[in-house]
Length: 263
Image 1: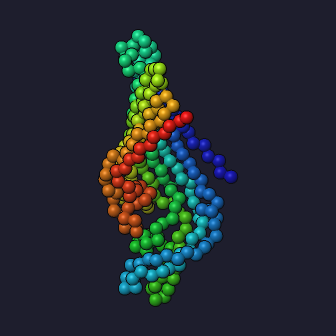
Image 2: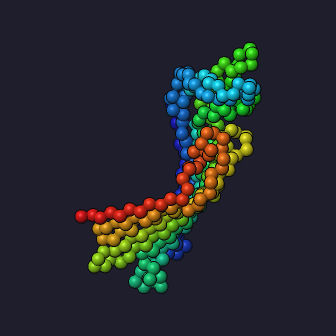
Image 3: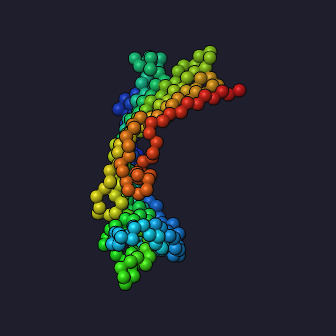
């Protein structure tokens, strides 16, 4: 049994009643599961191109997949810092900000760093960079591929930097009810993926998403659009999809509208 304790530290400071500053540092840990460690070898088939025998074109090769008892845990480090502004919250009747009573806004910067990710190497990458992975490609005496080993391994790292921001507003209670409006947004300006340790990182595009929450008026609910504001195309990746599905999706701008009536 492996025991692990990871710390988490939180700091909150209010220089005055309307403003709260906050910061968090935390560490994460994921131990490899039993299949990743001890699964027996099983055979798959994959259509690949052998760069040492390109004249053969695309061929189907056997792939041996197995666990790896030498796996190390995945680790992560997270940093958050930000502020929450709630004007006139302590004394709305006498505050100069009384007109904004019910309003709150926040902004948070975050960074998440993951390392020792447990995964399997892309099969075509194993062939293209065979010298970096000794023993994974088993060849016949004539130089053609006999089979490929693709065990679970600790690969590279992921670094994500972004900003969360948003606000909410709750009106006073009226005869017809009250409004509760909330908008949250997240801007990821850096998503760097290092597929192999000591290799150059692949930095993905930045993206901005805006998610308005439903606006509640008495017993009715009206959902505002959910927008992907940037129409930036994801970086090209030669993997059959044309992009890395772990860091991007094929959707452009989109929105939805929903109306709900409660009886």
